[in-house]
Image (tube, rainbow, N blue to C red):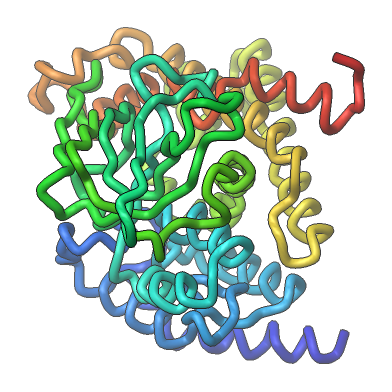
Length: 396
């Protein structure tokens, strides 16, 4: 343990010297997109220093731009970042989804070409999974990829493509054999977004924002060198990526990026008053206490899973994180808005800050956004089936 104590002391000293004041607490976090310019100088400086250190992806091998940290060292780094309220320098689909998947399934060439660019925040990725007729039943997808020698020609449509308008690359599930059972004819490919055969159309949400998109393919090109895993065996790769997505490991250090909103306790005291320093209303006091205990237990479970995963992402247990995490998010924003009364429900598209404060509008947008959290990344109903079969071992 002496070595780990030394690492902790070195990490604490490095963060104290290198994490700029403007990178502590709420603020912007890079996602690596070449289409988004970082304008905040401290955010840019923090990214540059973390890239140089290898700590944008601290537990990746150093040869791919990572820090090469052990599991124990990774947990120490997360703890020390939380202690100084440091935001992540980089948070993206690259770091949390396709990167870990390529580490497991990618060829040496794919790892060498793609992973360092993710680690250096030079590319952002989007996910081509859902289709208009294939959501929870993802294996029924119909977007076709036809073998054309050294590349595939892709035709079809994806929907709810988060961040596609800012992404440089897409990881995509496509059908390469329509004549076999649906799970057996799917391949996992990578393709650049900036090409003539890819069209992105933003979908405007009820919140007034457009984080999701429709993506259309007309003879779009994916090189054979960017087929991940075997042809027609992409379902295995695609499922593994979803486990990385559902693990929520980056959230263990993401607290510094948030926190701009008033806490639930502060909100309740402001709305309901205080009695001897506590929330005046006992029913609300009990409700918020239950949430805080549930959230604390959830974070501890995530941390234990990381510590026990031997450097990888946990398997089916990530479905537990998906169900519990999304329901906690929804509970949090439900309580926020209830405590604010009429000021909790502005029209986020037409109302302005003339009447509603910026944080009120932002909280309501988040409340609307997280209504979908129990649907995207695999609905919570599907996750409960996975938990029943893969975690609890219950019969079909």
